[in-house]
Image: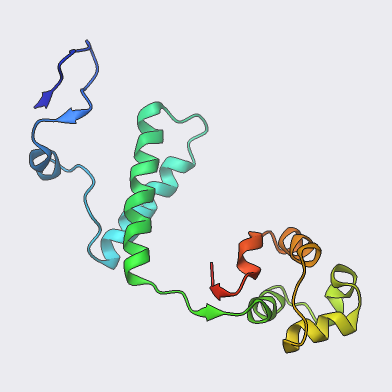
Length: 146
């Protein structure tokens, strides 16, 4: 089933002789619908909950992650969102008010100016906000919501 110029006892070669046969036998394949996405996501969660995954489990995690990401990138578009939009969303999700960010941004007036679009977040603001909300600093840059 597998071609390998240097056969290694007990190990499968890295070049499959018949990938179509592997798919027929149940190897992971491209995700085509929401049901498959749910199945693959469940399998990924199970694998990532293993305390000390084997090399094969790590490889499966990487493969499932790629397949899931590919499907999601093709089927779920992310809306355009300004840094102010994202900050408003985070405030809402965390049940916070503008005044709750005053210490992080340097005062209630700064928070108000940022949320109204009259002031941009600086690097220090972004650093504090990403730490507070446990998100990547990239989410506060203009463009698609990351």
